[in-house]
Image 1 (cartoon, rainbow, N blue to C red):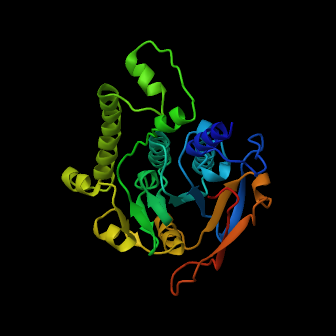
Image 2 (cartoon, helix red, strand yellow):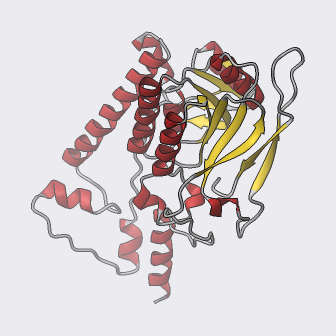
Image 3 (tube, rainbow, N blue to C red):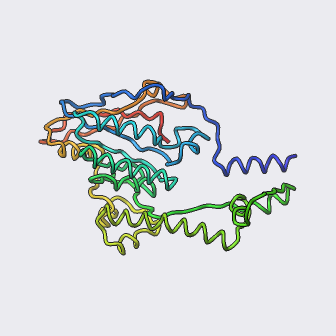
Length: 315
């Protein structure tokens, strides 16, 4: 029995399950506009991509604090598109990546927003914009990276665990009924796979990789061969990423905000965010907000002194 409990604990750990201590946020509550700072009739919508990128069914296994809510991002983009006073979006990214399809859908939604609304997106990368986090970033018109940001990790990875020896040791056996040998192998994640199944997974992996490289080359205006050289999974500090043309500028959130304001042509702007009323409440695990100081830049039309960003849905 002791060995069985150890095996169950291992399987739960590998699957990433953990207890969710956060109160659920009802989708029945509509998003509301919240003014974060600034003045003027022109608005800049702040949208945050913070956490892992995962499908909703994966996100719901654990705490929603751990992943980006794709549906909510869509809602925010719709509100920004419909409000004529919103003239630009400031997209703040702090994500190490995650599921390929979620990153690709986010990229698609952001590109569609730009094309349909005609409103620019200025990206500001926080601590990390890697893999899927960077995938979403190059959907913007320009990318800013914090001086201490980590950028890159262009590539695709697939992880399989082989616990066959452990399961045999504690007397756990599995039996799979499938219509074909390949189907059977791929249905058992904790056993070795044959060459045919391995080649299938590699074809999928390489297809995703080729698309990632192609989008980097297209959206960062790089030759294919240069983009492929960068796509070995390496991560780069901000200044090196700028030299490699993975980002446009190195600066802080207020610098990206000023760039967004300049794209609107307005002398001043109000920064807004879209949130559900319940998300204003403190989390069980800590404060519901953290302040990000915005420095007043002399001789430039920036009127904000600070910006309060909600963090109860962050990693």
